[in-house]
Amino acid sequence: MAGLLDGVDQRTRLAGENRMELLLFTLGSKQKFGINVFKVQEVLQCPELTRISNGDKMIVGITNIRGKTITVLDLAKAIGQKAIENIQDSFVIVTEFNRTIQGFLVGGVDRIVNMKWADIKAPPKGLGKNNFMTAVTQVDNELVEIIDVEKVLSRMMNIPTTLGSDNAQVSRADKKQIKVLVVDDSSVARNQIKRTLDQMGIESVLAKNGREGLIALKSMVEDGEPITSKLDVVISDIEMPEMDGYTLTMEIRKHELLKNVPVILHTSLTGQFNSKMVEQVGANSFVPKFNAEILAGEVKALIK
Image 1 (cartoon, rainbow, N blue to C red):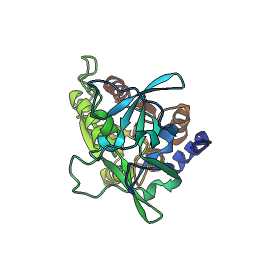
Image 2: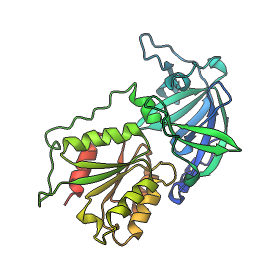
Image 3: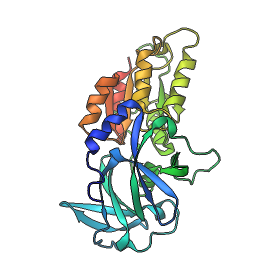
């Protein structure tokens, strides 16, 4: 696996072109899964693990990688599949999500493929609440499932969504109902944001990806009135099927009736690259997932 992720910094520039690179892996069967390379720090043969007594059933152990203690999760078990066997022959994908670093135990790692977000599709409807797919795509005529990692992590991490009194309620000077469009492909992330906005007395409109969000925005201005008379803020994830958050922001800024609405990019992607992209695409701010107080404060600051 040495050299597999060489040049990741250069690859992340694809994010501003509605493109991404997907690391393909398996979980003990032929079915391929994918994760955005942007979130991957390292891929390595599974190191020696220290077992944790009375730990979460998803955790296979902890290990020390480059001076950091990393929790390693069996990703197959986490999504309801059979636990990975032959751990010593497996791999660990070290990732950063929501400002935390963790390792995912996987059966095997295939390769990196360059994809258009337009080719990443929402999962089929009717899968139910217990599925862990956030998107699907085709690579060499094979189905690749993209896992909702935020949903996996939410099951083992207690992420607070209760606001303090400073952010619990907010209102406009003209007393009109505040409305925010929330765009995120993860059902867990959408619900976290909605619960935060509910506590602030803010109405939320939900969309599952950038294309759906843009359609919703354009429908709001069909009468020729600017979006700012109907919507106060857009909160958008960056990684989404069909249209990413960077592209959505650029489409908003190009549209005469949409261009003045404030946009917050709210994502588990981190790094200085995001700060540059926020400025380049015209977003107002970048807020790492998930901190209810920080997000609420940013929304409050943008509401006129």
